[in-house]
Amino acid sequence: MSARIVSIGTAVPSTCVPQERAREIFAGQPGADRLTQRLIHAAFDASAIERRHTVLAEFGDDLSPDDVIPEGRARFADDDGRMLRPATGARNDLYIAAAPDLNARAARAALADAEVEASAVTHVVTVSCTGFFAPGPDYRLVRDLGLDPGVERYHLGFIGCAAAMPGLRLAARICAAQPAAVVLVVCLELCTLHIRPSADPQQIVAASVFADGAGAAIVTADPSVGRAGGLELDRFATTLTSEGETDMVWTIGDHGFEMILSAEVPRIVGREIRGAVDAFLADAAMPDAWAVHPGGRSVLDRVETGLDLDPTALDASREVLRDYGNMSSATILFILRRLLHDDALADGARLGALAFGPGLTVESALLVKRRVAGARADSLPVEAVVGA
Picture 1: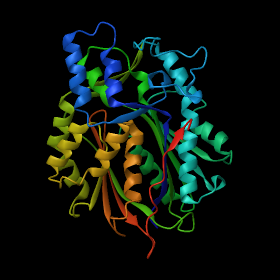
Picture 2 (picture 1 turned 60 degrees about the vertical axis):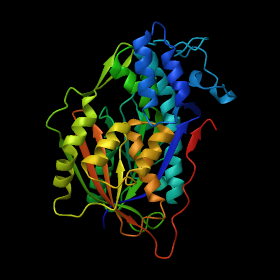
Picture 3 (picture 1 turned 45 degrees about the vertical axis):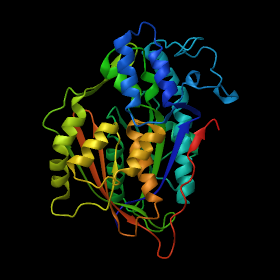
Picture 4 (picture 1 turned 135 degrees about the vertical axis):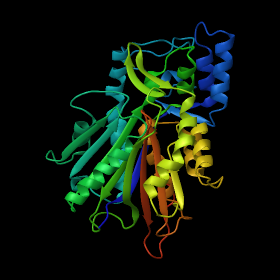
């Protein structure tokens, strides 16, 4: 039996920031000259994003009781709303404080939707590139969910936006080796921890798209585990583009992690995506539906053009970008979740998934939707909102 994604759960922080407010916060940074202001407005307005979620409560419109900033926690804005520049250590301290709860909420949502008890989980795979601590997110999930302390744990760190695909691939490999395995895969990114005032066009572009969120998937090859149906994991592939090593880069600086995201990225993706997909599919037909990581609106546009897709083919990806922004590795799980619960996709529909990471790396997956005969897919459950 092929491994399948039985369910996907998602969670976002309670602070939701409309894109217009995010733009004004960044445009109001100290010392922003007229050119910087123009760059900020152009980048934020062209993003095709309406709202994003963040663990930084000080950027919300109003602080709720759940959003009170703990005493001693580094602030990212002063009392007048001007952006500050906390040190990397202080940012990572907030990651340590906020990440476990968001991870656990996404995981609990996935377990509930799968109708799987936490005690059934045999393996945990965690994914993140926006913070570090040890014992880490994998350890905390065992403790917070009450999993068996003998559960096998794996953490994939600092791989970037494409990392959910290696996480699912690892789960599929585990299930192939151990058919009774039940694997919990959780991707968590707190990208907004690394925003800072900057006139650098690449930092402005990054600030205009990145957001916070977590996605979790239950993966098993055992047909007796959980609810029937899901997304079968048919095949995976990874490839490097011929250029782009310096165009998408993720490093650690003194005032947060630093993202280089050059204007060449969409062009490289558009130029090379057809060759990467053709090599991946070989002689197989094009998929019936697509889940493409929305690194940004222009990346989706280039994929659509490069693969000669129907204008509606990337609707799920564009909707997630609009509603949540780019949550790095977690984003593709939000998209797959929408397709998993999409009544318009029939049993046997083939889904192509693509994600892009530093390098440039292209991660691909082919999934097959399975539905119970005569049953309708569930309506899309509401995301677990931390603090709600």
